[in-house]
Amino acid sequence: MSENTRVPMAAGNWKMNLGRDSARKLVDELRNLSYSLESVQILVAPPALLLPLVADWVSGSRVMVAAQNMHWEARGAFTGELSASMVREAGATHVILGHSERRHVFGESDDWIRRKVGAALAADLVPILCVGEKLEEREAGRTLDVVGRQLSIALDGVGADDGAKIVVAYEPVWAIGTGKTATPADAREVHAFVRRSLAETWDGETAGRAHILYGGSVKPSNIAGLIAEPDIDGTLVGGASLTAEQFVPIVKSSMKR
Ligand code: PGA
Image (tube, rainbow, N blue to C red; front, side, top):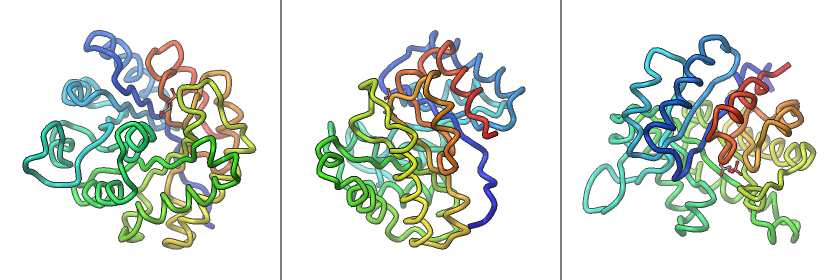
C-alpha cells in the first residue's frame, strides 16, 4: 500500500440540532481555526435548511460543508427529499449517506444507499458512506460480515477513480450517542478490514487514498487514542460537534503525529 497522504478529517454531524445563531457562532470559530490548522480538514454537516447560509459563512476558508442525506433521483414527486444537484447548488461538497439513523430509524436499505452513492458521485459530491454493526450483531461475532456487506452493496458499480475520493465512516451503532466508544483496538480491526475491502474492490493504491473515519461518541477525551491508529483518518462526530468548546479540541487533536 502506498505511503499515507491522507489529510485527517474532523467532521461534525449536527443532525437535527442548532439554529441560525448558534450555528453562526460555531462556524465562525471553525473558520478562524481553519486558517491556522492546514493539516486537518474540517467539515460540518448542518440541517439542510442551513446549508446555503453555512456555505456562505465558510466561503474563502478551508471549512467544508456536507448535507446529511439526499435522494438518488434527479427530480420528481418525492415529497420532503433533496436531489444531489440541489445539495450541490446549496454549497455542499460532501454528503453523508447511510448514517445509522437513516438506516435504522428511517428504514433505508443497502440498495437505496448504493443508488445514493452513485447519484452523489455523478453530481460531483463526495459521499461519506457510513457503515457499522448493531450491538447484537457485534455480540454474535458478525461485525465484519455486516460491514463487509454494507460496503460491497454500497460500492457496487463505483470505479477506482471515484473510489479514491470516497470517505467511509465506520460507526458502530451501539456507540452512537450512547457515550460508549469502541476502543482503539476494536476500531483498529474494523478499519483495517475496511481498508482491505476497499483494496479488494479497487486496488491497494486507491484504498490507500480513501479516508476511513471513526464515529460514535467521539469526544475531546478519547480522540487522541483513536487518531493514533494508522487506519483511522479522522472522525465523524455528533454530540461533541455542536459546541466550539468540544469540537475545537477534537479538530486540534486530529493531526497525525
Ligand atoms: P455521536 O454521533 O458522536 O453523538 O455518538 C456520531 C454520529 O452519529 O455520526
